[in-house]
Every structure is written in structure tokens, then in C-alpha cells.
Length: 378
Image (cartoon, rainbow, N blue to C red; front, side, top):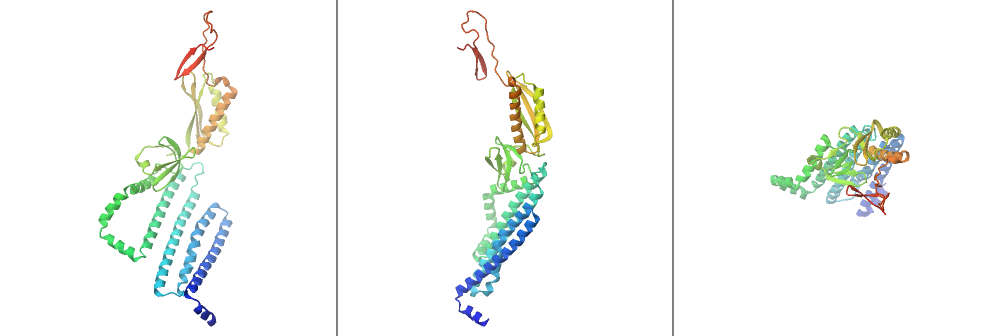
């Protein structure tokens, strides 16, 4: 033992410190590997997606935190001067603060994953789930921002120069608060608007909105903006205070189910009752229909066509859009196959009077800006 100690005394200081740091890191990674295996075993035993998500969130921050803890514990074994010890200890404290903040952020993600698993938006009536998810998402973002701000404050307070700077700013706190207030007016307005949206909830995740002439689902609500997913995969980005200061349409404000319309323009000879029965027969076997509303009526009559409006309901906006498309395709195909004469057509009256008319029996119709005119055709 004495020979081993004497051997380490002969090792150069830099080499010895590197050996101790490397050994501490390797030991930390070994402990981390054991922890990972235990967590993986627990997740595999539970056989749930949630358990694997929780393990994934926990593993990543521990991979940094555990080795730093072991390096911090190995500082007394290192050959350092007092000044070097203070500097290295400060560096390790900063690393531990950052890794611990990383753990807290991932714990927030774990909390969100657990609640998202409880409040599933894929269920039939997902209104409550979308309401809770909207609040959870906003709270998660606020908590993450607070963790980052507090972490940076703790790190800066480790430096004497930053502490003196903070002390000097206390004398001009009133002026500083005024300047910050003016500079951050828009950001604070967005933050307050976000709180108002999260808890009064004029919009929620998954709501079907009509905004600025565009219709789509609320895909994401952040601290400063809202992402609207348009049906053609475009994204409409709007500042979050837009939904506090300007009007918009929310089709799923009270319930998650929706009514959708399909308009068809047919000839007067179309058998409305037959088309109505075909609509009911089609939606009854379709899983997108929520078995609530299904009907077809004549809502308008024009010079050459009548307007048929098919009304159907569905559980959510995504299902409703698909159901409307399927109903439109099926009814058009049904009428074309069974009643082709009921498709929109233009009638032309032939004037055969006069035996001296060289164009007797020939006529055609021109459509121009909504007017019709019968002229001879060669």
C-alpha cells in the first residue's frame, strides 16, 4: 500500500488530476449504466408507452449529472492548490447547476407525458382532454422558462463581478424597471395573453378555427404565437395576442363534434328522396360518422339547377373533413351511375318556324357572364 502511495506521489500533478477525473467520470457512467438497465427492466415489465417515455426523459439528464457528482466527490483526492481548488470547485458547481436544471426540465416533460396519457385526445369526446392539454402545455413552457432564468441567475451570482453589477443596478432600479417595461411591453402583453388563453380558453389544442380566411386545427400554442395547421399542410403563424384582440371563428368551442355540409348542384329532375336515402345508407356504414346528424334537403333553386345540401356530423374536425369528401364523392358517383339525366345540363329551345330558314333545326347556346343567347350554328 505504501509502495502504491509512493508511486502516486511520483506521478506529475497534471497527470494525477486527469487520472482522478477520468476515473470519477468512468465510475459515474458505470453507475448510470446500471441505473439505465434497472429503468429499462422496469419499463419492459410495465409494457406501456408511457413507461418508456418516462425512462427516456430520465436517462438523458442523469447521464450528465451522475458523472459530475462523482467528479465533485473526487476533488479532495486531487492535487490542487487553494486557488485552483476554488476555481475548479466553482466550475463543478456550475456544471452541477446546469445538469440539475436539465433534470428539472425533463421532470416537467415527464409530468406532461403522464397527464397527456391520462387526457387522451383520441377519445370520442375530447373536449376536456384538449382543455387540460392546452393548460398543461402553457404551464410547462412557463415553468421551463422560470427554470432557465433561475439557473442563469444562480450561475451569474457565482461570479463576483456579476454580483457587483447587480448591486450597482439596485440604485437605479426605478429607471431600469421603466426601461425594461417599455422594452418588454409586447413580450409582457403576449405573456399575459397566453395566461388568459390558457385559463379562459377561447382556443384549445385541436380546435377547428377560421382565421384570416383560412381554416385549420390549432396545432401548437407557445408563449408568443399560435400555430394553425391548414388542411393542405401549410402552417399559419399568428401572435398569441391576436386571439384576444381580434375576432375569429371557433367551431369546437363548446363541443368537439362538428356539423359539416356538402353542396351539390343538380338538374330539376333529380330524385331527392332517393339521394336522401342513399346518403343515410352510406353514412350508417362509415366509421367517421358519429351517428348524430344526417340529412339532405333542397336549399335553393336557380335557373338551371337546384341546390342540395347534405348535412352530416362527426366526432372531430379531422374526421368531419374526410367524411364530407367521401359523401361528396359517393353522391356524385351514385347520381352519375343511376340518374345521369339529373346531372346539371343546359336546355336549348330550337326554333323550326319558317320553311325558308337555311339553319332550320340547328342551334347552340353561348354562356357569357351569366347570360344565354341562342344563335345558329353551322
